[in-house]
Amino acid sequence: MGVVEQAPVVKIPFGQRAKQRYITFTDNEGRGLVAEILDVKSDSLKIRRQSDHMVMPLPIKMLSDEDQAFAAYLYKES
Image 1: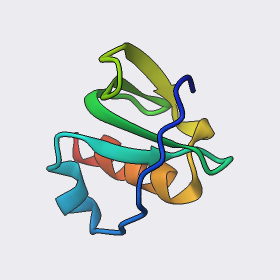
Image 2: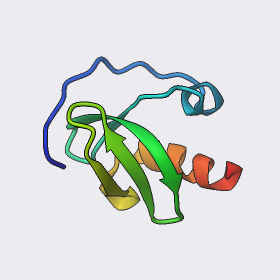
Image 3: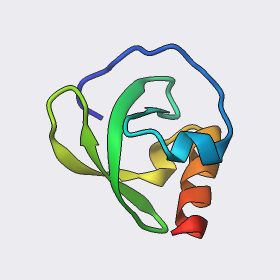
């Protein structure tokens, strides 16, 4: 996933979380990534990392279970 960023874990409802510009994602190995969501697909998110503004796809299968559920929520709402 590139640069590893540590961020505090704060659980908020998906609806509130989706309204944030920058969102902290956690992968299935516990590493954090702070990014802005640019597009939502069924199997990936197009993101812009906060650390270096790199635009890249983020495969949903790489995310933690909670973040996979959040991605599914975003896809359903889009």
